[in-house]
Length: 115
Image 1 (cartoon, rainbow, N blue to C red):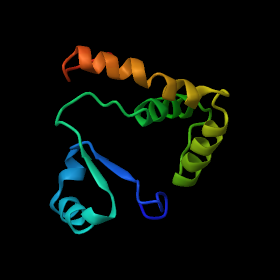
Image 2: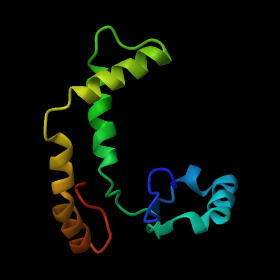
Image 3: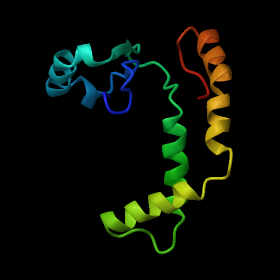
C-alpha cells in the first residue's frame, strides 16, 4: 500500500471473502492498520468492484483461445495478451458505470443488483 499510495491516501476495501477473513489475514490487517484506511464492506453485499467485470472479460477471452493454455506460463501469456486486446475505452466505460451501479445499489438498500 505504501508503494502504490505513498501519499498515505490508500484505502483497503475488505470484501469479507473467506480468504480475507482468515486468522492470518485478520492478524496482518490489525498489525498494519496504521498503514492505510480500512473501508468495511457489508458481508454478502453486491460486489461493486469493477475488477470482477475485468476478471470475467479476461476469463471469456482466455477460454476461447485455441489451443487453450496448458501451463501457468501459457496462462500468464494468454492473460497478458488478452489484457492488451481490450478495446480502447473498455476500462473507462467500467469506471463511468460506477454512478449507475451505486444508484442501483442504493435503490436495492444494499441488496442484490444486476451487477
